[in-house]
Length: 387
Image (cartoon, rainbow, N blue to C red; front, top):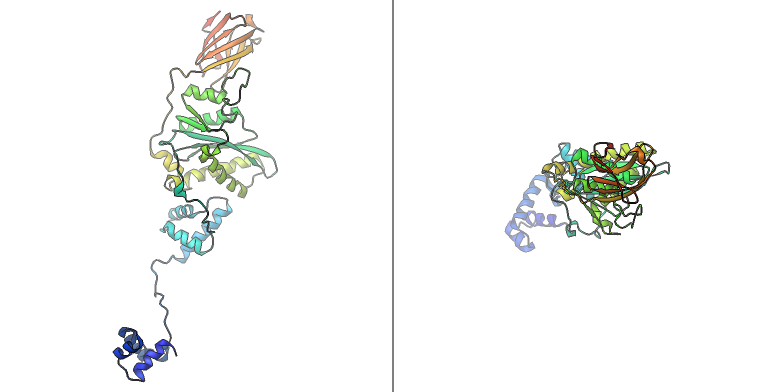
C-alpha cells in the first residue's frame, strides 16, 4: 500500500480527522486534506503520486530555436570556423533570435555537442597586452600551407594589435622581402600606416641578427621603408613566438578553416582567404574585444599614425658600376630608382653614400661624381651637383 492510499483510508475507512491522521503519520494536515478531496473527485487514481513538473515552463527554449542552435553548430564546424557559444550567439542575434549565451551553452551541452575540458587554463588567468588604439601597432607573420595537389605555398598576414582587424591576407609561392614591403604598403594605403610594427626576426623583416646581407650590414627594404615613414619597428625575442601571439592565434583559426575548404590552386586559395577575411572581420565576435567584431573595434576610436621624422637617421652604403646609360640603380622606399651620373663615367666602379634623402656618388679614390636629392616619387634622379 502506498503512502497516499494509507493516508486516504485512514480518513475514509478509520474515520480519523485530518488532524489525527497528520499527527499519527507525521505529515501536514494540508496534505491529508488535499488527498481526501482528490479521492472524492478521482477515486482510486488519487492513490498514485503525481509528477511535480510544472504544467508550463515559460523559460524553456522553443524547439525552433534549439534546432537552429544545433544547426548553426554543425554548419560552422563543417566550414572549419569557430563554433563556440559566443559565435553562435552572435549569429542568432543577427537572425532576430533573442536568447542568452548561457541558453546557447545549455542547449549545446545538453545535446552532447561540447566535450568538457576541465584541464584547460581559465581565460581569466591570462595577462593580455593590447595596443590602446587602432593602428598603434600591426603584427605580421607568414605561414606555410599545402594545396590539395601537394604544392607548398606561403600565406602572409597583417593584423591590427588593438582590434584584431585582419588588414591583409594573401597567398604566395614564396614570401620574400618584396612581398613584405608590397603587402605592407598595400595595407597602409588602404587603412593608413601604423605607428609601429611587431614581427619575428625573419630575414624578410629584419637583418639585425643576420650579420650582413651584402657585406655592408645594410638594413633590408622593409627596415628602410619603416625608417622613411617614421614607423617604430619592434621584433620579438628569438624563439619566443608568443610575443606575436595575436597573429599566431590567427593561423590556428585560419588553418582549421582551410582544412575544411581545400584549394587546388593558389588562385582558389586566395578566394578562400578573401572570404575568410571578410567573415573574420565583419561577423566573427572576438572574446578579447568584448565579443565585438574586429571591424567594429577598428573603427570605434581614432587611429594612431606614425610621426615622420625630419631625419629618419637612414644610413646606407652601396657599391655599383655605372651602366652604359650613365646611371646606377638604387632601391629606395620599395622602389627602384636610377641616379643619373653621366655617360662619361660609364663602366666606373662607384660607391653610393646614402643618408636619408641625400645620395652622394664617389669613385674608389673618393672623388665626388654627383650628388642627388632623392624624390621617391620619381624614377629618374638627376644630379643636383656633378663632380
